[in-house]
Length: 436
Ligand SMILES: [Zn+2]
Image (cartoon, rainbow, N blue to C red; front, side, top):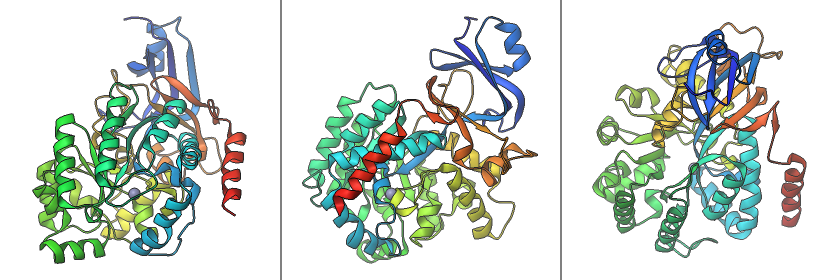
């Protein structure tokens, strides 16, 4: 075997697959951005004695986390509309604020702020849905993060698009531009079934099929959405999406807090994935995604933070803890929401939902070297009896020391390598002052 560029090992290594177990004193060999071997440290050193080697003592090495749904630029809107229910929150607070203030420059600052927060807390891949997606893509490219980018396709004028047709055509132009990018994928982002006409859903299904592109939509987010759908169509939006050809393996449905058993079966039969956003659902009191019922039908359930206006953090470790506790609470069953299952949700299942499981989501030979490490030598982390439980229940993104994407180090010793934090905070502060 060719000598790899470097070896990286740690006291604990959680590969997530093929076995979701904790290995001790294991490491990976990395060459040209990919993992070429995973083995005990002693074996790696014996096989590659001349290879540069870093051992992360008392640290946990695992695949980078995947934030499967968010609106990065909304980090500039933390706290806007706090305390309102979803429809009032959107119509009275969020949409007017966005129309007035969120231009391309604001989206650039907000996205960079969110990406910095995500990287520092161990997220290596994010799925975004926001206006000015060309700006989001440019910032992601400069930052070196892996992502799926969609723009909200919505049937009214926004600061970015005239109407749904315009948003759809702009999405296709962006898709062409990034078709061969190694880290950035463009997806279709119908905002929701209630903000589009049936013909738009049909069109999106047709174009997505032609391009084999992913589609992400907010779906069955609240009781009100589903009640209105049942009144208008005689059934929920899941069935509407099935009838318009959108329900399929490339569809990612976000929230899904209200589902009948028949709708869960429809989703499972179509191999559609679900993105669970517990903090956003709790903050807006939207309901609870029936994760256990979906998983029992083999539906892939990924994890997302949603935008910072309904969360308000982009730290997926906070989301992991919440998802685990909510699973126990909602099912009145402490055996639900096991820490190792939660970590799989934020890694391999996230990769599956985004159609990237061949490349990322686990530490396995052949996959991209997208990995993170957390230091356990902190008062809230020692001692470590079970690294899975430590990560999910008594850790936070602030313990992250190392973040690597495709073999490139973006965070080292807990410091961002490509983003100047002071400068970024000044930009965000200046933007806030412009509002007043
Ligand atoms: Zn959202």
